[in-house]
Length: 471
Ligand SMILES: NC(=O)c1ccc[n+]([C@@H]2O[C@H](COP(=O)([O-])OP(=O)(O)OC[C@H]3O[C@@H](n4cnc5c(N)ncnc54)[C@H](O)[C@@H]3O)[C@@H](O)[C@H]2O)c1
Image (cartoon, rainbow, N blue to C red):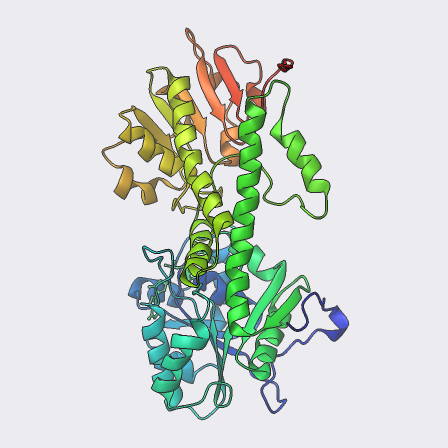
C-alpha cells in the first residue's frame, strides 16, 4: 500500500489531472450509469471543473441530465446539476462518451446473487462497449470501476473483457483502477466531496496517480489516500462496510440489553464507548437494524468471499444473523405494545433524507407485522412510493404522520426523520388507554410524561434499581 494515511495540504495539492507525459489533461470524464451514485458523481466532477459525459441505458435519466434535471432524487443534486450545466451532458452511446473523455467511471448496478456475491451482468456489457470504443482511440484512457464488485473481478473478468474488446493491453495502452465510494444516500454529494479517505486499487502506478490527482482536484477535505493493487482495494471496500455493520450491531446488542436493565441507558453507555479512540463514536447508536443498498449486501459478500476460499467468516455471518433478528424482535415488541390494536409505523426509509427503502427496518417491520396478521398503518415523508409495490394491499398508507398516529394504538418510530420529533405532543395523546409509542431512536423528547401517551424509549431500561440475585 502506498501513501495510506498521507494528508494533502493545500500547498502540495495537485489541481489538474496529468497524463503520462506530464501534460495537464483537459479534465474530461465520463460516467457510465447515472443511478443513485453515478448521477451525483457526474454532477460533482462537473461542479469541480471537469467536462462530464454521463451515459445510461435508461433514456429517461439521459434526457433528465440533458435538460438540466436530476435523474434521481438526492440532496443538493438538482441545484448542483443546474450550476454545472454547461459542463454536463448525457448520452446513451458509450462510444461517444469514451471518445469525448480521458477517464471513465463505471457505476452500473451490481446486484447481489443468491450466494451473496455480486453480479457483473451490467458491468461486463459496459466494459465490452468501452473496450470496443477504446479500439478506435489512440490516447491513453483510464477506466475506473466504482461499482462494488467481488474481489478478483476488476483484475479478472472486467480487465479481460476490456482487453479483448479493445485489442489493447491494460497498464500500457489503457489503465484500470478500482475506485469505490463510501457514501450514504441522502448525503452522497457531501460524502463524495469529503471522504474519510480515498481508496484506490490500481493496475499500474500511472493509473493510480491519475485517479489520485482527480480526487485531489475534487475533494474538499484533503483526504488520506490509500493506493494498492486491485484485489486489496476490493477486499478493503467490503471490509470497511462489513466492519461498520458489526459496530452497528454491537450497539444494537447493547440497546437490547440496556432495555432490560432498570436505570440503564444505551446512549450513555455508547457515548462513553465512543470516547475510546480505538472504537470511535460514529455508527455507535443502538437502534434498529442496518439497511440500505450497501451495508447488508457488503457484509454478506464478505462472508461469501470467505466461504468461496474456505476461510471462516463467522463474525460477518453473526452480524447478519443478529441484524435480521432485530426485525423479528421489533415486531414482537410492537405487537405486545399494540395489545390487539392497530400498529403504526413512522419511517420506511433506511435513514432520513432518502427515498430508499431497501432492507430498511420500518419497511421490513411492516412486512413482518402484516405477515403476522396485524393491522398496520405506515407513513414516511419520502419512502411511500418505493414501498407500494411490496406493501400495497397489506398495510394502510396514511397521508400524514398525524393520520398514521391517529389510526394506531401503538406507533413504532423506525426512521429518525426530523419531522417526527417535531410533531406536537397533543397529536400523539389520546383519551382512554394511552397510545403506546416505541421510539427506536429516542428522539421524541417532547413525549416524556405526556398524558395520554405511554412513551417507550427503546434501549432504555427506565427508572428503577436492578435487584441482582446473589448466590
Ligand atoms: N447507492 C449507494 O448507496 C452505493 C454506495 C456505494 C457503492 N454503490 C455501488 O455503486 C453501483 C451503482 O449503484 P447505484 O445505487 O447507483 O445503482 P442504480 O441501480 O441506482 O444505478 C445504476 C444505473 O446503471 C445503469 N446501467 C446499467 N447498465 C448500463 C450500461 N451498460 N450502460 C449504461 N448504464 C447502465 C442503470 O440504468 C442505472 O441507471 C453498485 O455497484 C453499488 O453497489 C452504491
